[in-house]
Length: 251
Image 1 (cartoon, rainbow, N blue to C red):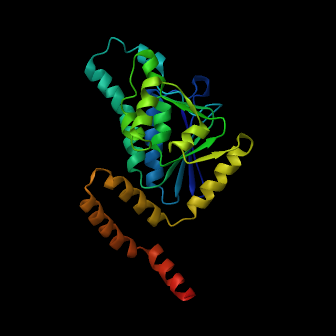
Image 2 (tube, rainbow, N blue to C red):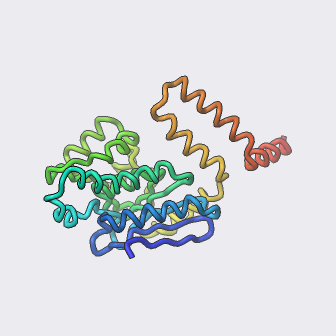
Image 3 (cartoon, rainbow, N blue to C red):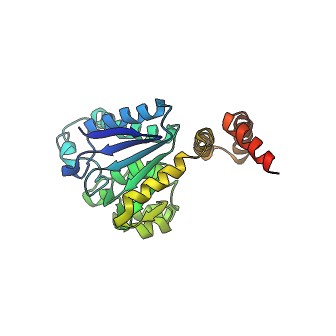
């Protein structure tokens, strides 16, 4: 199975399961990943989704052996293949719940893009991130839209055009990842983080994610108006009603 899927309490776990290929992305894996994301979106029990990789690495990017077999394909065939990954990026962006990437080892090329497309990235101290496509005459095309929203324009340009990997410390310094945990206690630290996130109001977290990404392409005035509408909607949720009543009783 190219994907392992399970639900433990409020946390759904999706594991890229091609360790012998450093979890390289092929059509089968991408299709199974998209299906798993759809399951987590519909499961009311799930509050947080964890995405990780089996073995020593998170994901090495596209399966180049598979790409080589399509070298004689036409532009429409290549476009269809590209859309398989694009659809996963969109599924992550539009997912109603927070998706957390837990990165050990290497996250390169499309694998780095996959992690960056998640809402949060937790990394082991020895993790590496990079976009080496330029070294084989290729470009990290779709991931640019994601990377550009995470780091500055000049850092994005450097990462995309040099193809050189960076370590977890530098990745955190430029805003690419959220937290670094020691390798020896990585899994336990991730579990603690997920448990804390899962305890937050599901409606508040979901509304926050949707609004944050919605305002990307809006003018300032439109973003404020979108915020006003979300504010009004949030006040009507059960979580907000209970939270406000609880706060008022403390005064």
